[in-house]
Length: 160
Picture 1 (cartoon, rainbow, N blue to C red):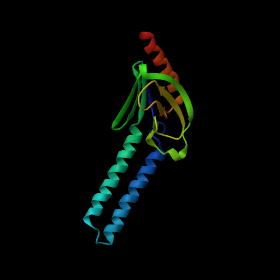
Picture 2 (picture 1 turned 45 degrees about the horizontal axis):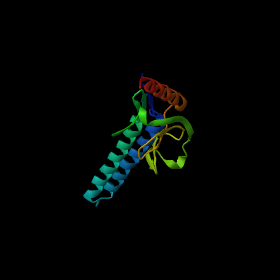
Picture 3 (picture 1 turned 135 degrees about the horizontal axis):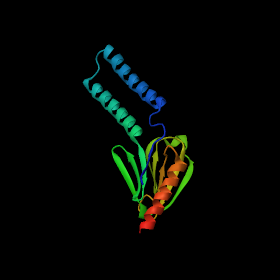
Picture 4 (picture 1 turned 120 degrees about the vertical axis):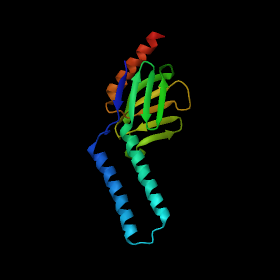
């Protein structure tokens, strides 16, 4: 039994439109700078780097997903994968909504690791050991993901 859950807004038209607007603004800026001439060659490399980072961020957000299985829980955020073995999990519960000022992406806190794909309810996982003892995910359906993760954890413990 494996339960897959994508990040909320993974295929959101609003998210796609936002990144398209950002990309269009960057290309327009390059055109304006080129029109006035005298643009240093390094500016094009900088612009290319900014566009590459924006595209990487868009792809990473759209590819973020979470998985619960009897082996444990995994979070995928390109190019990173974070796995929590079932034997290390002490509790799984639905948490509160993520505040807007926390931002999006992978967030590191003192003893906590957050995979924030939307400012929505979280699934909070407490671990028995390790540097990150609290892990927070924002799956598309937090209650369903927490329920499936608890079921998978129960199956894992029944096997042992």
